[in-house]
Length: 548
Image (cartoon, rainbow, N blue to C red; front, side, top):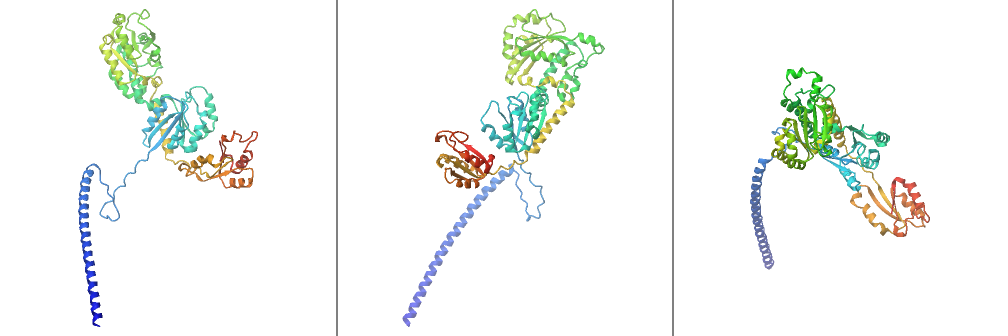
């Protein structure tokens, strides 16, 4: 008994030792964990301090985002944050290589809903992917056309049909430039076209489009034209008022307000004697203008001076190649315009000025105008000005006018006869076009059709069209194709073919020329006459594709 009690005592002491060892180990581990947690806390505090410093810097630049929750009763309600503006892409297509659609695209890009408007010229012909992919990526499509387009609207059915399929009828617009100009054949054919009856159309003139998209360029051109008129009026002493039947300067009102201010401040008010002169006397004081030019580039200038706008100022305009016997003797009613197609021709003329200097010196400086044309940059403009001022021609004449290429590309002659009403109509027409875009651009694209199960039927081995199976199962067709089922066509078990077709919603008849020739149907020894009939009757011709 004593031995048993002694054994139990030993076991108890061993258990106590084990427990004490366990407690020691546990306490050691707890100590380590506490040390780790202290170190982690210190690291967190260090990181937090760094974050606080970064926040202080960032808060100086960006306003803090304050989140108001239901648990913050003391925080006053704040207005909701502004939503990010949704942006859209517009694509413009045309069979015309000109600046008009480019300027239109640039003007539309400035609209508050459109962040990108790109233009693709379909002429010369391009790959289909060059225009099909942009159509798919755009929010809506605009077709631009004019009588100058190489392919008119009624011949663009392929492009129109594709755009409508991808974007929907509401998101395809048509804008036609100068619809009333040119022959009536294209108008008749377009009016009979199915797309003409279903698509929203807008019409605008070249003058209106210039005023909307190139207003700054037009104003520069009009100011220079009025400077010519001012110079000639200053010579004759006639009052600043066109003859009866011509456009009045005051009629332009807001259209050329900036130009009028410049013109009014530069022109002296006519004297009482000049105001009392009869129309006949004023007509006798109109000027003869000689344009000295070696090229036909100055034809636009002669047309301008012969326009209604200069009717009361200019009596006659002649273009002469050289200053010879054609030029009449100097009079107070004779003006000379020395025209140079570019800076180089001005430099060439100045180097040979000795021959003409004597003739020019017979005229008063105020009667000689120098025009340098076709400038394309600020550098060429500066060069021409420096050359004029340094050369003797600058001492023989008083006036220098510099014209840019893009200024003459506008319909400035038509705009000279504009009034406030015409300008308002142009702005209103363009606004209606923009409103139609903004209304339609936010609409979703039509849902793409679901193809379902595609069956590939062929007498060829499946390995021949494995590439096609891989393509149809690719992510590109994931939303359209549910399943792809190849089927080998044999002359036996035709019931299996019927059954396979009935389980498909779309069929592809595949044939390869490696089998000898393209004898698909309607030829001697054709392979698929019966199969095509079955596929067409069961699936419909819209759901059948022949591939070889």
